[in-house]
Length: 406
Ligand SMILES: *Cc1c(COP(=O)(O)O)cnc(C)c1O
Image (cartoon, rainbow, N blue to C red; front, side, top):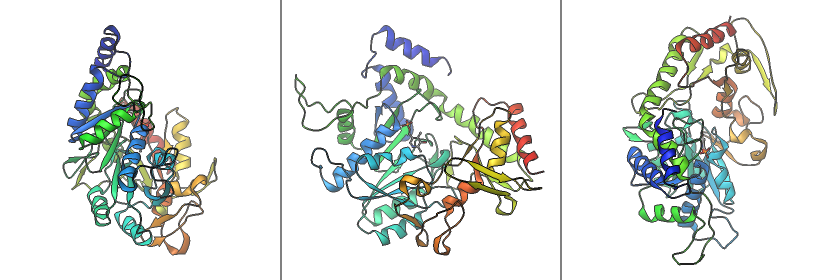
C-alpha cells in the first residue's frame, strides 16, 4: 500500500458511496481499459467472476442462449491451459463445459500453439479456447490467436497474473475476444480482491454490468428476463485499486529487479529462471520461478499431498529447496500442478504436441510423448518474489538454494 488507497476509501466513506456504484469504480474502469489498450473494462468482484462472464458471453455467441438452468457451454469441449491456477478453467465447468487440457511449451511455460493445433485436429468441433499467461510471462498469444482464427474459435485470455506485461508491444488482455485481469491480494497490484472483464464491444460491457448486478431489466420494479449474478466490484475495493494503479509500473520494476537478482545470484548452478521470448515480450515479472536441469535432479517422489526426496551431492530438487526456504520462514511454492494431473480431471483429455497423451506419474509419458507440464512441475519451483523483499533478504534465499546443491 502506498497511501493513496486510503484517500479513495475515505472518499467513498465520506460521500457514502459504499456500494457497487461510485467514482472509484468509474475511475478503475477508465484506467484499466486505458492501460490494457481496450475500449471497455467492467469492474467485478474478482477475476474468476470476470472469467465466468467471459465464458457465458463466448458460449452464448457460439451456441445461443441456453435454457434456464443450463450452462452456456454445456456438454461442449473447451480447450484450456493445463499448467495454471484452476481459476482459469473453473468457469468453464460452472457453465457445464468439458475442459480439454493443452500441453505447455518450454519457451514461455504457457499453452503450446502446436499442441493447440493438434487438439483442433482431434476435436474439430471445438470453438472456445481459454489461455492464461503464467506468472506474468506472456505466452505465444499471437500464435494461439492465429490457431483460433484458423479454426473459427473464440479466445478467452486470462491475464490475471500478467497485468502490465506486453507481447509485441501490446498489453496482455488485449488479444482475447474476452479477457480478464485480477486485483487479488497476491497480484501485481491489488484491491484486496477484485478484477475486470476487458472487451472492445460496448454491448458486452453493458451486458457484463447488467449480469453482474443481478440482471435487472430497465424497469422501475425488479424485472428479470435472464439469470443474474452479484459480481460487481464494491466502490470501497475500487478505492484501493484506484490508489494502486499509479504504482503498477513501480511494482513491475521491483519484480523485475527481484527476477534479475535471482538470475545473477543463481549463476553457475544447474538451474534456469522462468523463460520468456526476449525479442517479443516484456513480462511483469510477477513471480520468479526456476527450473532445475534434468541431470541435477536428485530423486523426488510426490503423492497426492506429500513429497519426499533423497539428498544427493551436487544435486537437488524442488522439495529439498522448498523445505530449505521454509526453514528460514520464507515462502516458496511448487509450480502450479498441471490440471491433467489433478484427480478431478483424470478422465479429461490432455493433448500434447504429438497428439493425445496422459501422464499418470510426475515424470514423462504415455506412448513416448513428452509431457512438458508434468516435467516443469517435477523440476520447477516458485521463489519468494515479494516486491518489498530487500537485496539482503534475497541474498539469504539465494545462499540457501546454493547450499542445496552442495
Ligand atoms: C489469481 C488468478 C485468477 C483468479 O483471480 P481472482 O481475482 O482471485 O478471482 C485466475 N487465473 C489466474 C491464472 C490467477 O492467477
